Image 1 (cartoon, protein in one colour):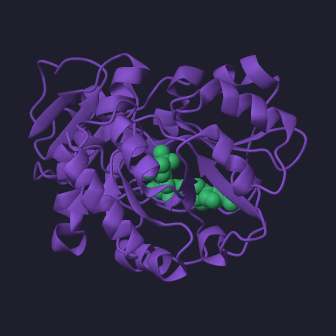
Image 2 (spheres, rainbow, N blue to C red; image 1 turned 180 degrees about the horizontal axis):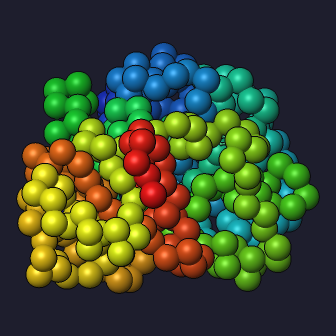
Length: 319
Ligand code: TXA
Ligand code: MG
């Protein structure tokens, strides 16, 4: 775990307009001073992300949102009070000073108060907003350990704070509060049911609806090896092929002839916690393709199902 000397170095780097990778309870972020346009442009350059895709601003406490949002609707306030600090991002009307580089030119801004102690120390030490996407190249699997970030960026990101394996392991739940009824843009560790318990009915955004979200287009969260989602019946059939690597919700079947079988757990929470590390392991296994057992259609699996469906986008044989 990074100590206060590491945090001080990271704060100095942020003040100098440099990038700092840091842990949150969802995934590791690639952070820059959210008030420094040049620093924000470096994020896009390093990630290889189109500049029209907006970033999340991380804040140390709920009281800071007043400085970043023009108005805070009642439902947003209620969600913030219930779930912050935590794995929730709120999309709100942006305050006038919020940089275009952050918002992709949109009239809204995405805000999040993370709970991870290292993220909290960094935010408090810095004293301002930290803009941060997940610390991976555009379209690739998000990092859930500091080593994943180093593997991906090497010397390009000089400071990577250490915070262990991320508790949730999937990106934050994103809720837009721009219109009266809240809109769920990206499912995450906080479920639709959790949200609805606080503010009543929440609508799930349809594909392509709502503000632009890069996670909602084309292949995303994707390993390099083609990934196919399969039913358990198909899994049993494909398991007899020698060049496959498998992620299932059960122990290895006796008939398995492939290169690697990972049991991702029958619990959605545990499966999600290990998902990205498992995808990296499967990607390195030397298989011709990755087979993933399709998750159940229940709400508990929403976030996992969302990421796996996008990861499978690039492969023609998704079943
Ligand atoms: O858990 C997370 O959310 C992580 C950690 C580091 O906080 N961050 C993350 O960032 O996943 P990124 O950039 O990989 O995904 C942020 C998502 C994108 O889909 C982006 O389009 C959406 O947030 N977003 C940002 N600003 C938005 C806005 N104003 N309106 C709608 N969506 C927005
Ligand atoms: Mg991302």
